[in-house]
Length: 616
Image 1: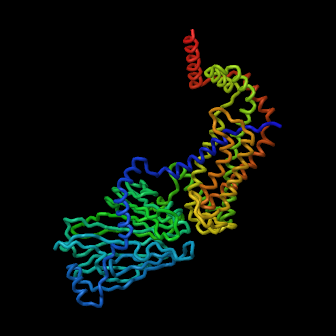
Image 2 (image 1 turned 135 degrees about the horizontal axis):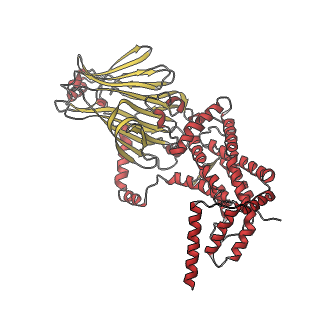
Image 3 (image 1 turned 90 degrees about the horizontal axis):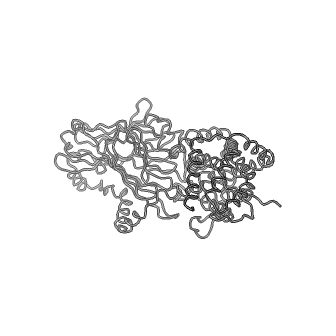
């Protein structure tokens, strides 16, 4: 019985794939030096994070008793001219078909932002702002040396309509015609809210020699069944320097100061809170604090985001046009705001990977899912992708077949020059050249598939189209499927069993069994192929148990199709006898060397000659 041959190119391909996975998991891990510094400053960091965790709620000032005239008088005495406004704890609601906002008289800020069409994994409405998880205000100094924050001030609401839009004017008055205004304008069927900050008659009240700073903080509310998984895709992203997109660390505490900022996005995986401006912020101090230490059902927040932005005064007055976006991180929705470029806040991936994800897979899947069930659309997309890549697969198998035919001649060379490695290498390269075979041609197809792999690795966990879409036993293709819950937690695996990763791992195992064989001789200096054959499926099982079930479904179907394509190519397309005959014909043809090949041959001949001279 003929021994099965080792498919080195397939092994290289899988090693590269999982190498990219490992790189993705650990690219943001701190260096040893950073770990040492973090250890030395552990107490300070813990204290800072704990303070920041509480700050979003603690920024809200203590409530005053509105029934106590003495308390009101004391409050008005502290805030000076702005005591002209009578305190009131009233809330005003702005809503349309998609979004509901509640704005408080205290601070004039949004204290609740609720998505009307979406729910969390446990059927609770999706809130981006709720129960004190966010704060917004302006810090400024008055000409009588009072340091105030708009969160301490009471605003007077005025609700009206303009061209069919709902308009809410919130004014903190310092006199009959002197005020600081927050103006909200909500359109029908739109997540974007126009937001204007302006003042009138305050040029003698606000000290223009002191900075006016906008402060916005938000703790990301948990929306998914796995807080670790959701936190993996929760980050602060910002647009600066004429369209450059950057972000703070996903895995650790981070801060940055940037110039010329167009928008700031607090992305909570599938939902985003974004503050954008027509005229870019000159500078912005940005912070991100990680609030998730481990997987826990009790953890309610993912990250704490913060932004501090100086606002310029013009002739002693404020006049800034901005936008609030509270809505899904959905390319279909965010692409509507081309002028602001909000769709750039979606994590498509970097470089060519992001390009493939954004302009190929996202629209292609949207097209398929427009008339197919979401899970079926994944299967169809997988089939079409694999068929599109079949020429690359064919090239890989053709290269393997050529190497197989040349194996007896390579063995002869190995035996003939077993004591002269350099001469063996030289003759081997000559044989390859005469036969028209490139030993690297099998690796190139594996490398060509890397952009596809990485793009899809980013597509499935971040595609809003897959959110809460069921297929077979999976109730959410954007999250992991669960067929059994474990009474304990396995490190790197989790406390549940997902079936799609198991199926994908089994398919990989059978594929590698077919390509590497069961009885593989161990070559000196080469990795143990049998060990790798078992390691790869296990790595797949652990890596994907907590990832989107749509991704595992893709790799399960993809591996099945690859096995099928491999069987067709080997049994019906490739013919060893014809390949052997073609190689023999190639040997008879004069072989032209390119400059690189000639240079390599000359170097090897010179080295061989020097070796002989040295022996003499």
